[in-house]
Length: 213
Ligand SMILES: Cc1cc2nc3c(=O)[nH]c(=O)nc-3n(C[C@H](O)[C@H](O)[C@H](O)COP(=O)(O)O)c2cc1C
Image (cartoon, rainbow, N blue to C red; front, side, top):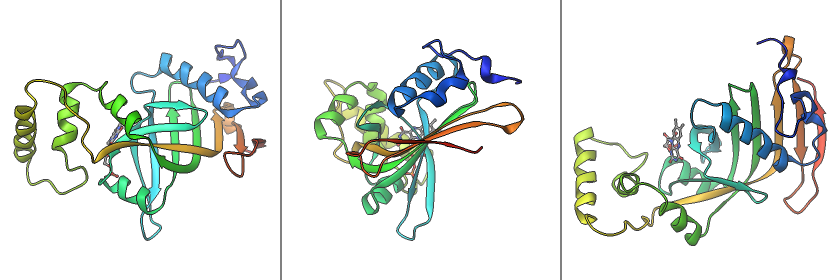
């Protein structure tokens, strides 16, 4: 792609103008809305990085299931590798990469569990098959065979032929509350635009800095 500065934002700004933003959540909302219209699938897919007990980083994709000024929410199994890493060190980094827009957003912050009520409300919106799968999966544990998993799924499904499937106690959500954001947009000849928002704690105001590419 050549000069990406001609891409229009919903606000009418051109993409080059995003560096004028004064607040990261509104800018994220604008970019996410655009990505939702241009990505072939899963504009809410984000890489989630955590560290293990040895400080060794780990990263995997998850789906962002909500965001507001308090942070970004995803759901998973508490006993999974990521769940254990977060329990040991409740800090994380996120990365959104929207190839269709040639943009990335980086986020760093602390992680807190969502409330049971919030997790219940989201779990209730999932398809029954996904709800059953959440019960049947021992996420990140060794699995002897696909057949063993299918048997576990059939067992859970048989228990819930009628009625609602409750949320498994070991399945819930987490919220990453940012203290750092970075917005990056491709520009010709690798002369990309980057702006960073930092704050010492979520109670502090944001400081914005433009960065060299
Ligand atoms: C696009 C995409 C979205 C995913 N979304 C989730 C998710 O929301 N929650 C989840 O537990 N795993 C999700 N996964 C699977 C994870 O990447 C990962 O394989 C799994 O959570 C186990 O990770 P862990 O062993 O580090 O805990 C997703 C994978 C992809 C490729």
